[in-house]
Image (spheres, rainbow, N blue to C red):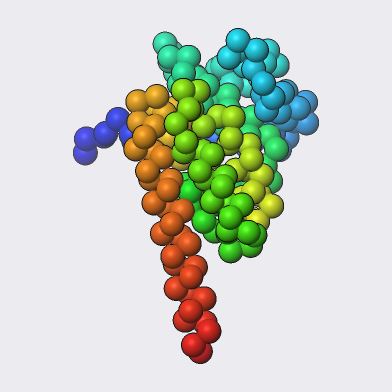
Length: 184
């Protein structure tokens, strides 16, 4: 069987997520160090305390724009309580599910912030999206998010379209289910 480029990336992402999950559940100091990456990064450099937990997992020669994905996902994971690794749930799907538990206008606004054209990518708005999904009890597939962010500068527009399609498909399914429930 031949492997595609996405398969090794997905496996690498899943292994990284497993590592970060283990670290943040067993070491409170590691959780705090990784959480230091949630704020503003001066000169686009991740905070020093994060390196010991993230750097050993970076593929050799990885471009800095791709490295940022690893540091960002690790930081986001440090504050989250749920993980859906393996579920293949995109952040668009997760926001769609969250809309069943909170204002649809709020989730749609957050989605729009994620997908708006921004030369720095969605990084500044991911924390808000994760907070919404967390407060609604909707797990994220961290490995999928890492894979999507790692290729953001090459596939960002396509990822934005996928997130939007996932969001609206999920909302449509919820609406359809509600209509069926009302008719029973």
